[in-house]
Length: 165
Image 1 (tube, rainbow, N blue to C red):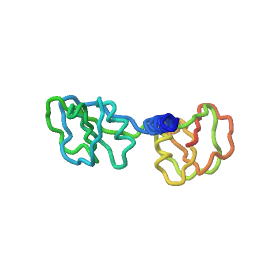
Image 2: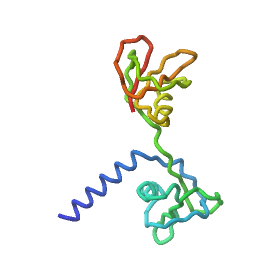
Image 3: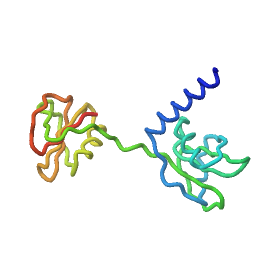
Image 4: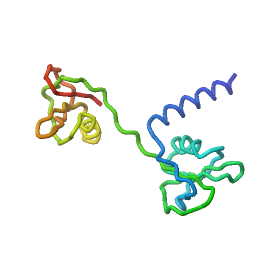
């Protein structure tokens, strides 16, 4: 029973972490040489992605069929080297997503502005701006994000798109 609970908890942890990261396209017959931080058994290169995403300091991996399948965990991609039978990949952060409200302006609480062609772009800009918790996008000047310290008051405004982190 204890093993079943641990398995469920481990599965939940893997699912939670894997949502935050994605693996780049796998590269067949390529080894990211150097930058090794450890290794772990895995039957496939896809399994290495999950293992790497739950290992501190792991940003890339190379899989070989050594010992029935081994992930060579790496701190970086290092140097790409043609190596028959090796499959390599790297982790990438998932794009930031924010819940959006169409035709709504969050009035007040402005902390700055930035150009963006879309409201989704504002989400990324806001997430990398200190103190930004919300934004309103308008088509002003080809697309402008109005960055906010908080949601503020919602006001119906045709064409505006607002979101929070």
